[in-house]
Image 1 (cartoon, helix red, strand yellow):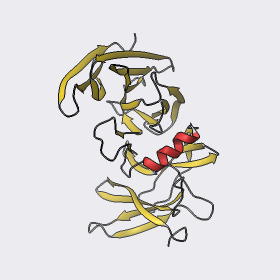
Image 2 (cartoon, one colour):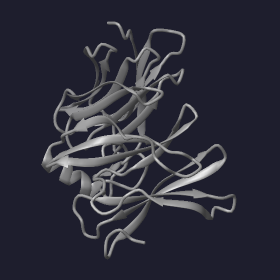
Image 3 (cartoon, rainbow, N blue to C red):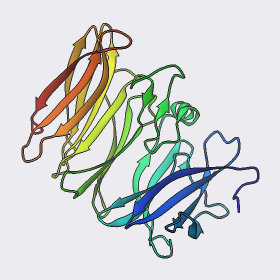
Length: 288
């Protein structure tokens, strides 16, 4: 049964866990500007029919404004969801899901988020319904200048660490959490990336030691800047940037070289509206 009169229901995420499918549906308040929703989790049989269903929200227990999702980490199934804690304030929460009866373990807070209220409003009006909470900033645009990924869930190469990153996509403020694989929190915080307020966060990654890397790019007069923002395991930050003169960065990524203490910043750029013109690549020492 719908949680709200006149609601809109959307499938938020689905996942195959131990050869069984689980899904979420979000029950939105119709016409709501902040996307408050109720959550229902479902377990599906081999014919994809629902064999068990549990509404996780009742009465005042409603969530949002960011969409909830399911993830499997270290052979466990988890529900990640957001809850408002005040005006322009929310928390990212996680609970382990019992795959037999869908009951949740005790809720753990992973991240406190306090975005710019105006930019949060822009986010709610432009976010898409994909698992990355991407933003569509132009109906006629293509590439990272127009479609911004705003949520990142990254595992270290050995699976021992987790990096969570969230941004509204309308400014350079970024919220992050570093977790162990059992979802216990190592550290969380927020940073502001270099550049103007229209920074595109391209990718993120974390190494086995818990050092984290955020890749961003933005326009600066007649050149584009691609940058690597590093957060080491103690919380110390460091920035490295590459200038691409008279060109537009199309994509930018960070890659950790396994078995070596080096990281690569790489990507593509174009010098006209349609065709890629070249690639860039630079190697960095994370300890530098």
